[in-house]
Image (cartoon, rainbow, N blue to C red; front, top):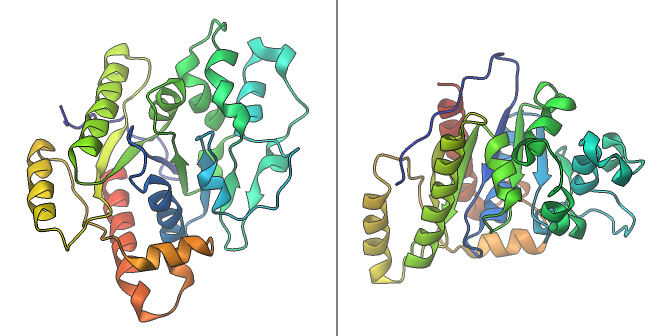
Length: 284
């Protein structure tokens, strides 16, 4: 159930890799992980693009963009990329949509319009599952960035399918409990469905990220070990405990790499270690 689905090799060594963080279960820290992982890659000198594919827009909000009700977002870019939807096209250019953070990470933000994506593209004849993949190819984003990180919604709809069809690999954050475990199973079933459709290569499993691990609860370690057994040979990254430093950094809309104090060093080490494992997997 949790086996790996190997993707095709990226043809050029100069092409950037596309990564998503996914879990059908909400509240597992997926967006927090994506935000800090992006900064970990930036810390290593990588050019990073983040794409927010969740209509809730929590990933976008962490980048502290100035509020603008008229700001265009990923939804407009995706719709503009579909020729059959010409009647719905807007005068939206990608360079006007990309937000450049002070830290040096580029972001294509989300918006509430994205919640209607599935209905908007329902009538097209082309492969609805490949709209995001073709968008990335059309604008040659892989050649412009070393790493593209996508934060997806906690659902199993067309947005999730588009993400899974567009990425090279997926990281799966989860809280070590039965509800989060079921969310992992459901996402993996979608990956298997994509493999069976044979419309594109399936993403690599880049590992599972135990998050919000409560060291004070004696049963927590047992629960995590039991879940590891169900994950088989898949990589399980070092567990992230429910540290107050996460809350402090997110309250300021900063990554853990923004802080110089020693209390953030261990979190920084964990994220850097994760980037190294991800790089190894994606280039193997």
